[in-house]
Length: 346
Image (cartoon, rainbow, N blue to C red; front, side, top):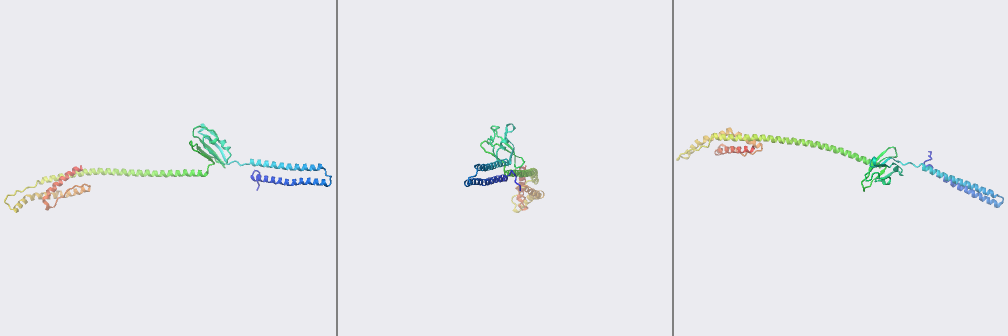
């Protein structure tokens, strides 16, 4: 696989080859120089005929070769360093636009300041002068920083932060943590779901409230109708109670007062009983059987109706025929009680 000249691998190989060449030169030419000088001296001692000019020429030539190789190695190293510097990768974080202030009339651009910061990420202190990056464009006013940036792609990301109140600290980290963005999105989703759920619950409560209100209104109406009906019924019962009392009074007036027999002196008990029976019995029969015919069932039915309407008439019924002496008193008591009850029901 071919290796790019600008890659880190190419720079490494260039330095490695230069070092190896230098070591070879040092070993090769260094040994050659020493060997040449030693040979020249040896020949001089043996024969005495070697020219010193030849020896000096060999020495100068060897030295020039060594120096030229050393200079070439240094030049290669400088070129490799320059190439490596020129191929330094651009940062992934790019600031496209950044402003700091309180609206168009009181803001400054901090795009260049942020873009020129050495970075793969930025931590910006959000305070009056952005941690010394710029001046304060609006003194004693809470400012806002607006940034459009990209990270490793051409997609622009917008971020905005409001300066915190005095005494509080805020730092804006670029690029923002994707987990924070995910959690913020999840939080917004939960808020929306909760809002929809509460809206649904509120709607259900409103519907239930309306239903209860309608039921309550219907109940109030039924109570009012019942009260009206009861009032009408009480008025009707009161009138019929008074009517029955009046009818009993008329009946008592028709049969007249209880007769008092005139019994002469000197009569026996049997004769006295006979006179009493002839005088009192016809009157009592008219009273008893007249009541039985006109009022017994009427009074009994009316007592049942009163009790059905939770009214206690407190009225005695007429005793049987064997208790004849109580009949007049019971009829009078019924008339009087019905008259009082009619006034209570008005």
